[in-house]
Length: 226
Image (cartoon, rainbow, N blue to C red; front, side):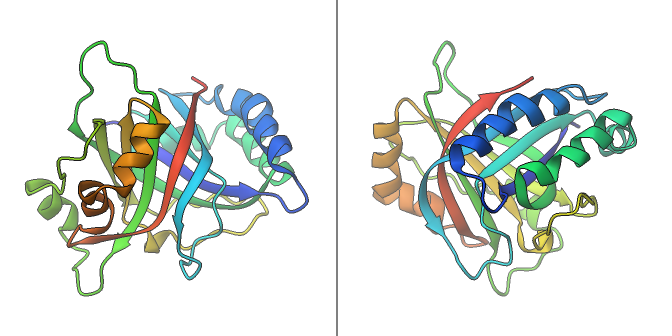
């Protein structure tokens, strides 16, 4: 099954947002696009912040990357490549912190045929107190939490399946064990997304899951690199 290597990253101190964005897209993006075995590569730039828990043991977040591989083994082979070594050398030039997650994606709602996905919502969740870690993904998928959110075009739940691949690149790492899932939802427009977030069903989607509690919720500018 396809897996996604996902990095939660923030800006290097002293680097403004415009410089961070330019470097991530034009420099680091070009380097990572050459990784052997890479399927797709998307960058999620933070466009609007709805929620950030200051007590979460993950560094502040300015972006989330998603790189797909056919398997964890294919990702590990890529990690041993000269191309990956160049990516690691570049990380301290624009990043101040990084937390690596390996994700498995589950599409809960498919986009209508021919419908463009104009605005993206992304949220990071931890397990609620008292919820057992073992078997959580299987239990959750047996009864997915997906309220009828107005304007929702597509929804994907990404569960963390591996936390044992931190990157050693001279920048601090957050606590990957805290993160349980990464949710994604698409809407026709920014206005539709904002309306959904403030709706009763939207609040139920984001805050009403009995097993998962969000610690960060963002509107995303998604950029496809490869």
